[in-house]
Image (tube, rainbow, N blue to C red):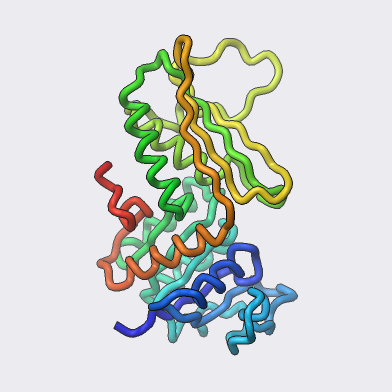
Length: 271
């Protein structure tokens, strides 16, 4: 099979530049396009130069329809509005759509799932092997420990992150809720302030820290009578997520239409 031709959405952002570098460092994939929002000051710039690489001849454009004519997939770590705008074009062109965008609403996710009867989508709140293994372990531990063990999730990210809790924290919360056989939406406590009253039985708490240049830190703590168990993951460089996204794209190339996760990519879906 020839190299997979990939478009990087949000090519001028931190993750976009990391994705461009990851493609340049890997076998089996080539950069086919670099997408930015209409009106961006980066339009017309060379994607390689933006990523700190030699010029590669791929200029940043806002025209996904045109650049996708000669592409096989799109790596999309942008913002919800941009991702939703990309969904229809990616599906129409038959692109593998790897989505790492966080902060998506229930209606956004419904739009994404609406195309998966005819398109291949790999979507995850986190593309790393370690985090997906952590989620599998969290699910098992939550199932093993009853409501005498409270669940608290703490995450930390750089000062520029615009959504909270992080997509990874929510993914870990979903894993804990699945282990308990409950709905995360009905049991999440995303912020506490003032006179909150006693902790609700079965609640899954979230706390978010923002500052500095933190790539990503997550911990899930199970607090029981006289003991605590903490499971954690620390990301040292966002290239970790870029290589994970590239792995997902290569895995999905040629797959039948459907909605996949990194657990599927990594063979963890049955854990």
